Length: 79
Image 1 (cartoon, rainbow, N blue to C red):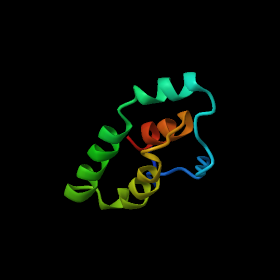
Image 2: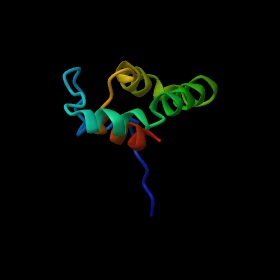
Image 3: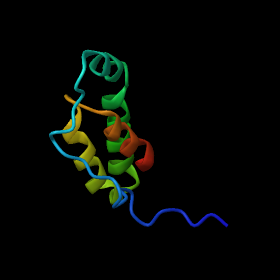
Image 4: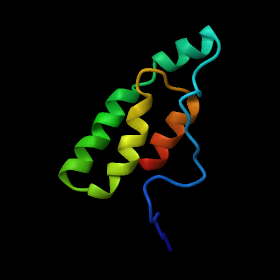
């Protein structure tokens, strides 16, 4: 039986502004991730149908310019 998730943003994810790619390889890898597009899709879903996504979208949208792998994991969780 699938129980689903009660909150779109799980408590075990911790996001900080000091989380950012350290090496140039990490920066290059993260530049290929369509993070902004996915966050935009979440915003569309939030506005049209799922207003409970508002908090999660506000958190993940803070890291669009300087994202790290942890941020991508959170977006995957929300999806």
